[in-house]
Length: 165
Image (cartoon, rainbow, N blue to C red; front, side):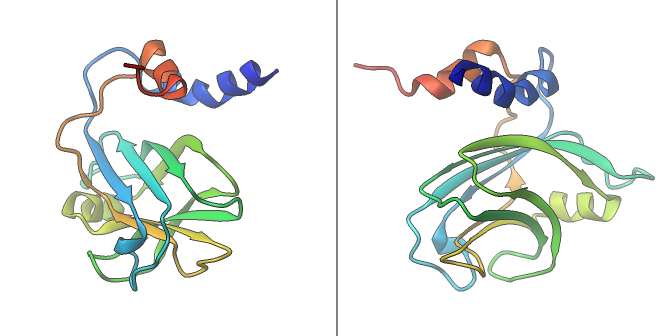
């Protein structure tokens, strides 16, 4: 039965980012030192947003997110918010509510949100029972290199861990 659970979790990864050229991507490495004010949390997370975010589109743009975390508890909320680095701002979307280790999904961004994303003025913040105002945070910035298309081998490697030497 655990295998079925893993397959259900992985379906969004395979369905959204199949073979083909890599889409533009944005990334963020979440930590307690990025929260305003900083926290003592040792938890970490990594976020990828993948898709074409067009600020001149007449309607919202749906983009994919992938989120991995280490060291967070089980009463979590993950928000996408508007604000420059070292400032707090309004919440735009709830990305995840509840426990997770690895999650993916989609988020719809308006043309205004796309402009903020492309300018580096969006951030992701995780709140928890211990840190209700924010445990870890990251500014969402363009990735230095595009996220590669997902393959079944890349997905399985997440669960295998690093190669033994």
